[in-house]
Image 1: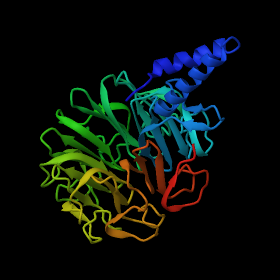
Image 2: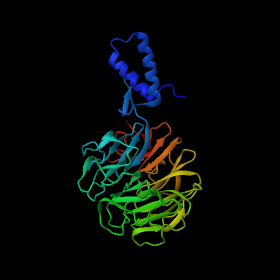
Image 3: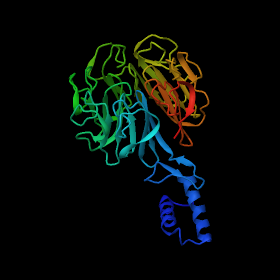
Image 4: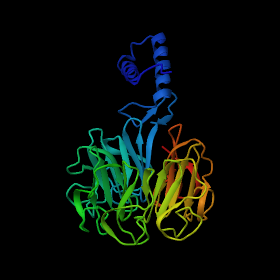
Length: 410
């Protein structure tokens, strides 16, 4: 039951600050009680990314979403601000510098409804359905018509009706799903991953050819996949390990259908592999399998989808460079594939060709893979991360790799 609203919380706080010298003790006590209740319920207001309570302790605003990039991580806070941490070599943390950060910093002047961390850049979807990006721009992946790196957000040219944004965690291109169910992409296009029939890099968005009924889009290292409203998947771009799923290893500059997928509900792309969550809560993956990232018990590349072993209750999927994770209906997470840096989260550095349970996670509501690390959003709206941590991407204040989840130090 909600006892107070955010607006009442803000009003009470302002009254306290304005009238503190004249407040009688009884009114002060009542206000303190109400503000404490509001703090517990809501954590922070739109203007804050943290709140200091009466004892002086700082509480982070609750997290609504998490995204893993190449060597950095970003979260969308409940108040629609974005915070990032980890590698900042190209300004991908968005706070105006190129200094790596071991704990979260707030992206300058931005409120979003979604965030997606790319290889060395980041993009955010705004409430007006425009997109802003920041960080590396060597191949036009910020979409602002230039190739100039940006340490603070800039607007993507010509996008005004986006409903989803996806930046490839291992790549240099981005894609946006628009309200008319078309897809536009920009950035690196050396393999045809923008799907416009060419291999020309684009500094502003171009349409993904032939797609007019998309419901989800995912950008990989050199390929792109779109989920269509008939529950099929189409992919374009690099295909040397079969990551397009069309039964060949032929590069494609326009989308082709993934073989045998007709009941997909979402799609996720790693660097050289792809996965689809199906309506029966199973998962199929295809492409590179050098480390077991397809989860079929082998290390054999697959040019068409294979079923992930032992998963029948998945509710979400996320693919990293060479590992894959699934959120299950019981709020646990299972991962498989390359584990040398702890990214599987089972307390070891062992590669896994079939899914294993991530240690200590039992209340997850979302999972997000970076290139070599993984993060989970928990039901209490806090974050746990594990895996590679050379640039502080786990957010625990260190650069120590972790083979089991650690809490973010806000």
